[in-house]
Structure formats: C-alpha cells, structure tokens
Length: 248
Image 1: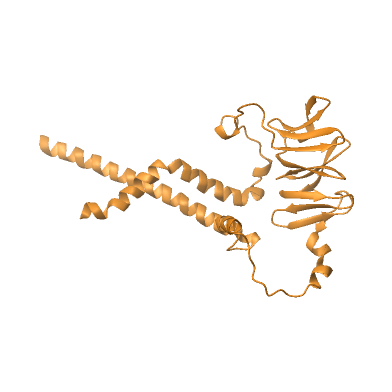
Image 2: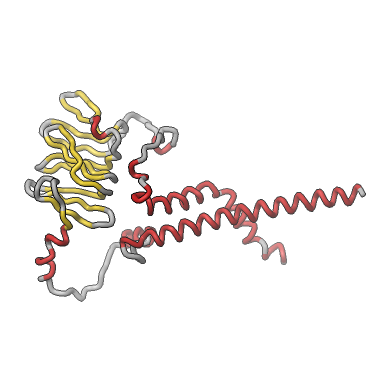
C-alpha cells in the first residue's frame, strides 16, 4: 500500500529530472520575456547559429518580401536584403536590427522590429518610431503602427511625429451607441490570451501572470530535482551504513 501511495512522488521526481532543462528554459524565458524591454534584452545581440532552430537547411529561408519600384526587399538569414537586376545586397543600416516583417506602403517599405519601426525612402532606411512594434501599415497620407503596451499609433507626417490613434479617433468613437452585445473572440484567441495572461489581467499587468507562472514552474522543477537528489543521497547513506554494520 505504501508503495502504491508513493507513486505520484516518484513520478514527480523522475519527470522533473527528465524535463528539467525544458522547464528551466520555459520558466526563465517566460519571466525574462515579460521584462525584456526594461532589461534591454531587445538591443543585445547574441550568436545563435549553433541552435537547431536557427540553422539553414535547403538554402536561404525568406521570412518576408516586399516589392518596391522594381526592387525586392527581402528578409533573409543575413538580414534585410535589397535585390535588383539579379544582384542581392545586404542593407548595412539594418544589420543590427531584428526586423520581423516588411510592409509595402505608398510612402515606402516599412520594416517592423521589436526595437522600432523603419521606413525606406529611395533606397535609404530611417528609424521613425522607437519601441516594440507588433505591426504597421499606411497609405499616402497616414502611417499606423501597433506598439506593445501602448496600442495603435498614427503619424500624418511620414513618421516625424506620432500620437495614439485612440486620441485621434476619440470624438468619432464617443458618438457610437453603447453596445449590449457580449464580447466574443475565437477559441484560438482565448487560448492564446489565457496562456499569456491577457484574458485575466490588463495589458500593463500581464507580467504578473507570466512572473507567477514562470517562478512556479521553476520551483516545481528545482524541488523535483531536490527530492530526487535527497532520496538518492539517503539511499546511498543507508547502503553505506548497512555495509559498515555488516563489517562490524
């Protein structure tokens, strides 16, 4: 009976040992992800070619592409690349920028990154907005960018100045009738928001959920390893004591 009741403890310990490294990665990165902007992680560059997920296989993998006036701007493993007349050239100005996507607008191509928003004008790139940008778009008169934690921003002067889109649209939005319809999202969005804590906390407090869950996971992994190590040490001590008693 005692053996039967102890199986959860044994499984907890063995799983903690087997999955210690993945648990540590998830726990630590979850906490650091929540505090990345304040700790400056978005500006630090590290070599990752030794990791399997960043290795090249089957030739260069293009993550994004944007045509502009006979020129292709593409995201390759080397960075942002200009391709014209069959000749490819890496853009030096963006060599240290983690550009995530390229967007074509009448005002030029936009480069979206976690460090800010870049705009291409006649082949030259300029940073027009600082901060973690999630997405961007624009037309001939207006540029918009979604900033993490601050919401959509709008610029009417090519990126020279920005203001919250909600403030710009406040009068029109205030005139809308109140809606009694229940708030609904897709199941996939709900799963994502529950995972990140967005469904339970406001945008500025999501770090609470991520910190608590990350630290809890870290504690479970370390405590499982400690239980396994303590039991193993106690077993060895008992074995040594038994041998010494037998010799005596």
